[in-house]
Image (cartoon, rainbow, N blue to C red):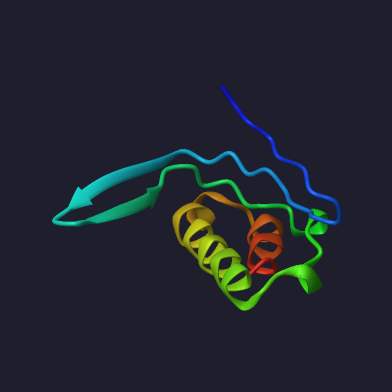
Length: 83
C-alpha cells in the first residue's frame, strides 16, 4: 500500500531503487543495489538543498564506479556529466 500526501507548492520526484539494509549494532546501513542513473534533466537543481545535491553526487559517483567498465566512450562521458 502506498500513501501519497500532496501539499500546495511542494514538489518531488519518485525514485525507485532497490536498497539492501543491514543492521550493525544500533545503526542501519543502506547499500544501493540498483545502479541506474537519475535523469537530472527532470530535476530542478536550484530547488535542492546542499544535502540533497550531495546525495545525488554521491549516488552518481557510485553508479559511475560500478558500471563505467561496461559502457562505451559516449555513455561514460554522459554518465560522468551527472557527477
